Image (cartoon, rainbow, N blue to C red):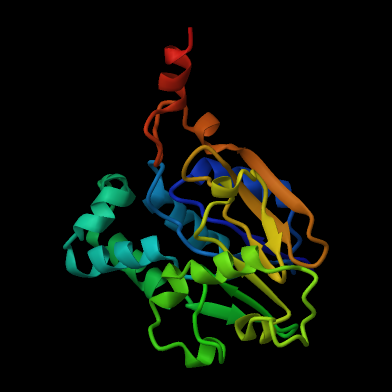
Length: 253
């Protein structure tokens, strides 16, 4: 059995379909999605439909991201928070234009079933963003920290790899788990187009919402699978960029 961690999708159904083909899944393989399925490209609602169908065939674990929490609130109340609308929510609402109320209710139930984190039998932790409690995930005060926190990744990046795990300088947060897999903060911010590893933290968000690719990683072998950039798959759209690929190419002399 192989297990793959999948980075942030952000409404890019074409990328998701391409990645699933690249993984060449077997019947017993597991998929752990690290959150942020919506907001960005034009097919957010269609991504949720696809994931719901995918879970009927494969063992899937769905972690909740901050964008998913915003969309869940909208599906429940029909009220859209301004912060969500400004970060991709408008495109997500548009993607639901052809969906019935019953279909939206099914999607709401899907969001409600998402996990804040997953801890496997090998003491590997999967969550969207991070946690802040030095005592680990069970002592986290606010659940929203699991899909908003960036300090875990920032701390891992600044750690000196020469510091041993039994050192007093080793952060207690990192000592609880053998490995931690996250999304939320695009590796593009650190000039990397592939998943990044810092100490025992793996960041699998390779900026699919922007000009990056959608990535999956075999959590045992660490083999990486990547699609085309989502800009190539949606050349007439902007995603969460300032310009679309078509507009960028048109500006070149």
